Image (cartoon, rainbow, N blue to C red; front, top):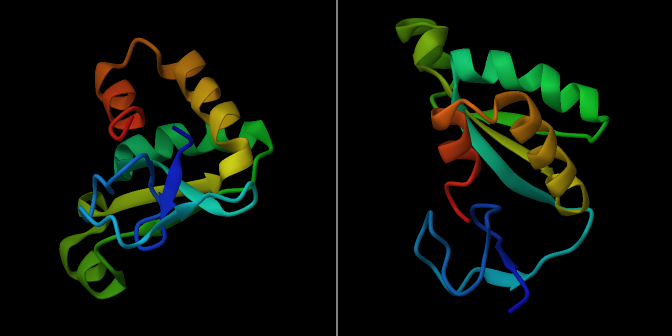
Length: 114
């Protein structure tokens, strides 16, 4: 079965979004649209982001806590969701695996929705 993408969460899946549980928001993915790659805490993001930069694949990260709470709680409690184009997702995953293959936590997060 060809993967579909959840319009709400940006996660590639097959029958139901593992994040929101919806099957209503699913549609065929497009090569240039952003898809969820990995969710990381601040320290993990600081390690992984240079690897993504080195791939040359465009990406963006979205914080989940928000600026007001980050200011109040501190940056270390922020969680970032990284998105890359569907067409560059495998290249980014391979780059992260090459560098962090021995890091069980990052590998688990990278394959969280497989």
